[in-house]
Image (cartoon, rainbow, N blue to C red; front, side, top):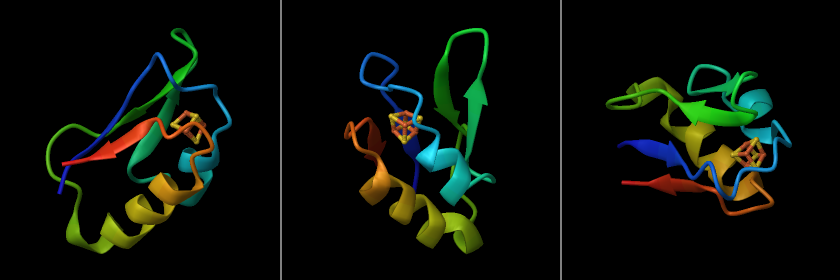
Length: 63
Ligand code: SF4
């Protein structure tokens, strides 16, 4: 499972970072959240899915 954030949709709510800090981090210079590159560790997949459902902008995609 991989996740990515669309920087054009991200509005910096940080719900993703709060829900899954091991998967998402906030890039202060660019003012949007980023997901870890590569596969999401198995133990973090549920948190990543919750972050997807909590994102008000629909900015996170799962591959
Ligand atoms: S919850 Fe969605 S809109 Fe908010 S920072 Fe995370 S990816 Fe961006």
